[in-house]
Image (cartoon, rainbow, N blue to C red):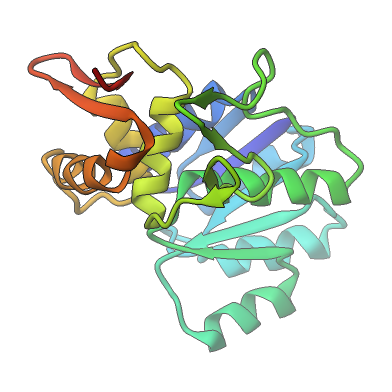
Length: 228
């Protein structure tokens, strides 16, 4: 699936590009409205991710001009503008979906997949080479995003669930703190790296009854292993 990302913040643009490319998407990224309008017709994009607060030309103007030019690519708006009025305005101009910042990367990917399906594009699998992971009776349901222990859904916050999903993908292997931070706090540029330690501390308590143990490896990151 081809993706056109229009985001003026360099850190956000780079983070999203890397994260989505790891999930099998081909990403073309631009930083402003004029570049977006110049690239959009020839980009062969299956989905456009469009920030609203762009320099020189507002994202809504980009969307309106694109639609007026006959561009029918599904558009997902990403913005810090979270009011109902802003969402309605964007949808009326021609957006297909709307996700306010900060957002969860798994939710963003799920919305991209949904828009790709509507447009008739076969979306990539989040984990094409492996089945849904299972460890110590825990498994991740890729459709709902929930994590089960046996037949029971674990009661987790979205950040705890994101961290556990990442660890379940590679039990017994250390995953760098920076990588986990990127997955758990995707798009949240005002959060410090140390925040992942708080999420890990809480998750450790949540899964204590499962037989799994979340281990901190100083200088390496975190890993999930069986207790004992």
